[in-house]
Image (cartoon, rainbow, N blue to C red; front, side, top):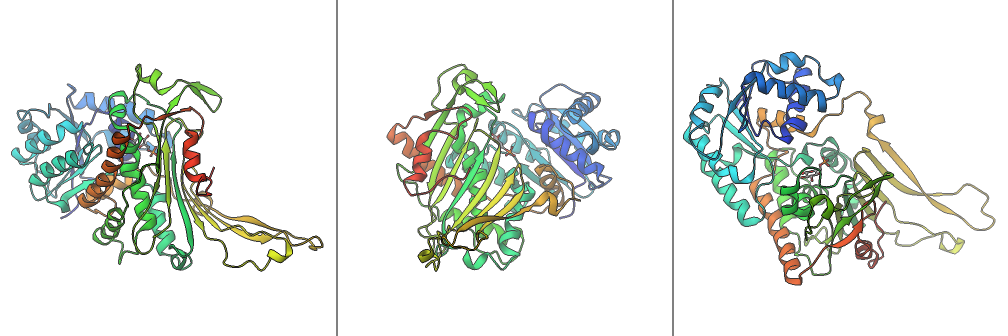
Length: 478
Ligand code: BG6
């Protein structure tokens, strides 16, 4: 299948479209990475005409895309047109199909709508001839709220589109540093021989955010941190860290390896998760309200979760993966920390020196860096004994690659959707393995009537999360 020359955006007036999709497309356009023939049709319930949509898009670009990336915005806006549609009823799809017209090479559809609209939208697309062989479809989360509902959505999509034309988005896979995990692991000889239970003590994955509920009251309170962040982004990070080397960098090989990891996740035992909900506090010196105040009512939804996960396979037996994510934490940071084991025998012990295990810190955001801590001798004549200290071998990606521009994750994903490369999209079996593990955690919480513990906004979550790691002698990296 060739590159699509038409892109149809559902949810075109929504938050994601304004903050991410339109800015990404405009930036790609400015860099001449979009086919000159590509036309972009937006659709949503709002009653707009082409000019109204272009105005909305212009405002969004001015708000969300840095000025130096907005080059040739006017010619970008010329690519846009709009069709009003109530996707919950079949009527409007004929007009939509007429608006889309007949692309010469193919149509890419991006669905960023409420989950309740997935099924009617797919039916409408199929009935109006917008699901033919030259059509591929991108699906934005949330794709269901549990395994069962995600299967219903996946089944509905599968009625009209085969798996090789379905592009499930996890925007973390569009992040440069996430892709760099594969380069770090598989383009270097150094790490792979050590990347297993013989040499690694444990792994930590932290995705910390400073934002609170933002304006997503309805969605977030029904979702919670486990389903909003762990089910998708964190499990994808875990899979990339833990997977076997794929035979090549292509969609089948990479996803085959990820799904094996996801299927090897051991059901989480009770006592191996901690949930929390933030209360009023301060972040960066700014007072912020508690979750219940933002929401305007009491709620049992977790805004923080920490999990001790295990992967039951040969490579990772006995190596815990500590995961934690939360809103209103002290800083925005996503990082992966690989703690190696101690040296088997310290020749320095008799000289009073202590060795510490090596640690690899992979910073995903906001700092993109890789730091390997190595032990070194503190300079001196050592009359009072030898002293050793960890020193960082620090690679800041910004310095190493000063030239290339930082891109929005969706730039990469939209381009891959238009060009038909599925490597960075999530396959159905992955999503289902993810849900299966998550559903079992939620079932455990329900069985135990687990209520989230409170934590002060601006702290690193409830103290029980610290205890979860510390009882194994592990300290969260901060
Ligand atoms: C989204 C979640 O998928 O990811 C949000 O729904 C979260 O709650 C966001 O804030 C985080 O993405 P990023 O790219 O800012 O780390």
